Image 1 (cartoon, rainbow, N blue to C red):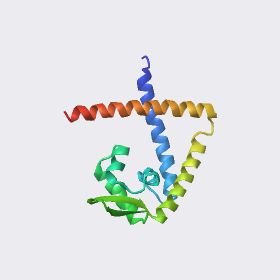
Image 2: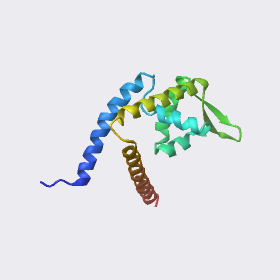
Image 3: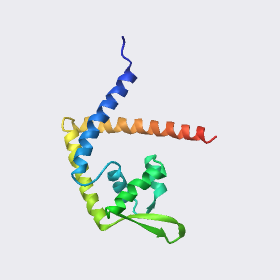
Image 4: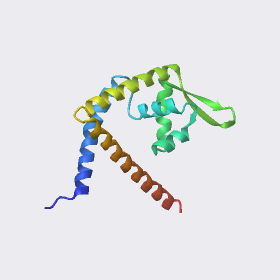
Length: 153
C-alpha cells in the first residue's frame, strides 16, 4: 500500500504530541503548574490587566475553560481579578508578585525544554522549522476563522 504524505504527517504530528506531552507535563508539575497554566501566565506577562475574553480569543478556548484555569491560578495566588474602573461589568486579570515570580520559573522552564528538544538541531534547522510551523499555524488559523464565519451564517 502506498503511503500518503498527509497521513504520514498527521501520524508523525500525533506521535510528537504524545511524546512531548508526557515529557512536558511531568517536568511542569515539578514547578507546581498544570496543563494550560504556563501559556496563560506568559500571556498575562505580556498583557497584564486583560479580560478573560482576550485570553479565550488568543488561545481559541471557551470562556468556561479559561475560567477554570484562572480559578486555579487565583487559588494558587498567582493572579488576581479586579473590576475594570471603566466598566463595572468587566473584570480584569493581573499577575500578582507571586505570579510574576512563577512566570520567571516558566520562562526558565521553556528555555530548558527547548534546549532538550532541539539539541540535535542546527540553528538553521531550528529557524527553518519555526518558519514552517508559523506558516502552518497561519494556515490553520485562517481555516478556523473561515469555519467560524460559516457557522455564524
